[in-house]
Image 1 (cartoon, helix red, strand yellow):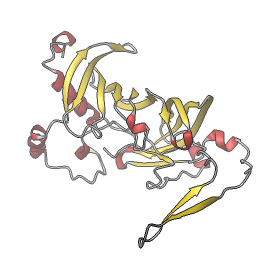
Image 2 (tube, one colour; image 1 turned 60 degrees about the vertical axis):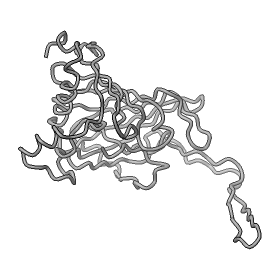
Image 3 (cartoon, helix red, strand yellow; image 1 turned 90 degrees about the vertical axis):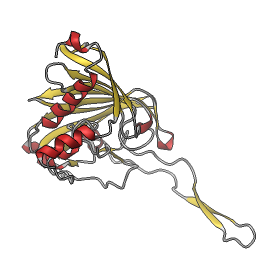
Image 4 (cartoon, one colour; image 1 turned 120 degrees about the vertical axis):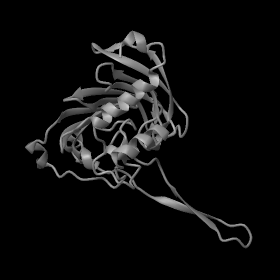
Length: 288
């Protein structure tokens, strides 16, 4: 599709559908090993942590070593002072007293800047058709019904073509996306896709991950294309993050490094899957 012809805005939705199809058709190795680098200013202190990880994209399986390389290199912390709390019981009349436990002093923040990153570089922010994912619980319908189902689906976004800039020398289509329903789930707001392959090169999302305040601020996503498949290169917060325990994080960036085929060196550490219910200490993406 010539860029000049697409700029009239009439083909914006066609570009969007081709992008989704291109992402869905992309194939990945059965297993990918990588390093997750989490950086930012923890108050005024620059922080950078690297976590070894591995994923099986077709089955949505992610494993990560939950202690960063930098934490392993440090001496164990020496506790100081006392850790105690007191209880207050309030009662009015015949009602049972309400009891509250109040910690004394300021609780210590977690050692991880944003939490243990249970993340994979193949996440696509809802671009991939779910029924096409190998191992998905959604059974893939036969070929003919797929056409009818897709054409009858309620659109998630209103799509507009803004311009056609080049990103790192690659001509792209720049789309604006306005959610028509479920804006907290349909987070894409801008998307840049290659004009030759329709694979994503950059995106802006209204929120990221599953915990506050990360879900409440915009993030910029940069993609890299390897062997015809999109991988997340980095995710950057566009605003200051006011975390628990009065922690203030600025310029937060999550980058995927050393992405490639399985490496024997990763077996020197026990990769585990952090508990999904431990949302306070685990950084995850929504399951879409």
